[in-house]
Length: 443
Image (cartoon, rainbow, N blue to C red; front, side, top):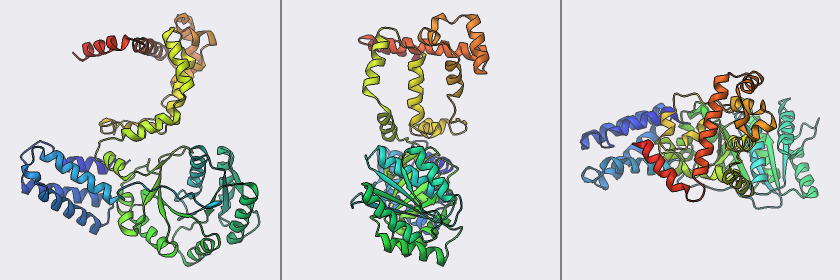
């Protein structure tokens, strides 16, 4: 996420992080590099220029040159301005109305249908809402089928009228159906085109007038950069939408859309899509995104994702098993499943301060745990419960059954034993012993 922009901003600010004398000349040179980094990220030229001018004014106004930590203060100013550029603070979704009607808009290929499913899943699981998805893309043959597949996947009803080519009528009928069935949120997935055209804008404007939605969201592919911003402006002129959704932020994103869109249309980014899974949706927090762009990580979001997967009762059971030295591979497998639910592995690594930079050239597969899971599934129930029973012949059988090598099986068993010992140490008063051991390792 924004790897190229992060690298270039890091290089630009390097001299101001304590690696040289801070002068008015190299502050100007640094901001020139910052502007170049923003332009390379496909940020609008005027926005990039205004950004660096504002940073320079604030830097000179806050006496950065004579500060005890000039580099840190400069980075803070850049971070604050990045946050402001992206909207300043997060803006929630409006869920008033009975039912709440949410209209999805955007070009074809922006990820509208997939995101409609993600939003439905988010509102169902996080906000405890009874959601109805509505298929109003009557032109793309597979659109309604795609929405039905998504709906089945997340357990949400999909309303569609096969053969009806009037999206206004479909959306009105869907709202009547939602009221009759006690649905409190209706998400309408509309048709997109390959480019903005009059017919498209007229159609979505007619739907908007007919259903009077509480939220109209503009979905944009973040990889399209400045084109996305121009399209957003065209849609906003017609619909006056409430917020923006940035999809495909897990891809090779330059960042121009995220950094420019608020300034151009004066509408907040409300959600971001960070992967293909239905759970890969995040509320957009400008301050957290600024931290990530500057390589500071996003520990708050990481903790929030972990808390969502945290099961207190399961945690107590695990704690008892660790205390009794009964923690086995079945328990380990459950922990892996919880980690996988937290999202894309590379995205998670990017939330750890410093880790994103270290891992930028490392390809972390979403199926990173596949080999471990295969090895565990190739064990008998008894072997999973008591790994110490796994001898040489059993290792050979497990390796063959999982499509791995005996060395990989040995490595997993060794790591599992070390992890079990560390977890045991952390029980009760063993925390002090654990700290002493870690200090020894550090020395």
